[in-house]
Image 1 (cartoon, rainbow, N blue to C red):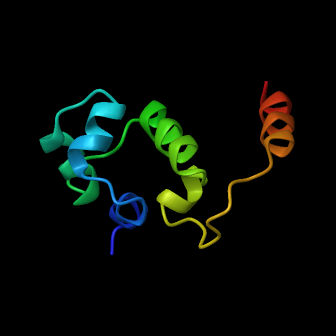
Image 2 (tube, rainbow, N blue to C red):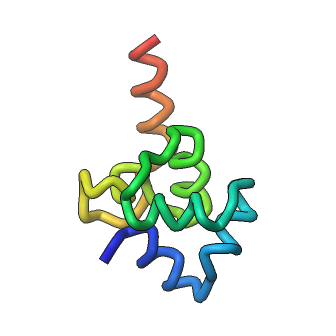
Length: 81
């Protein structure tokens, strides 16, 4: 099952609910779940924050659902700049 769909259904939400949250049409959100179009980075961040998970989890880069601690993310971002 698609991670976005799994996260959404775990909260008993509909596609239209999430589409409204991220300000897109339900049909576009459906394409995200079906992996027909790529999700913009800004939207991935919004979804990860909303679902309290990481972008890596949504993108299948990890199976750990718990988000990364904020301090680690901030340190890595500072090192990149």
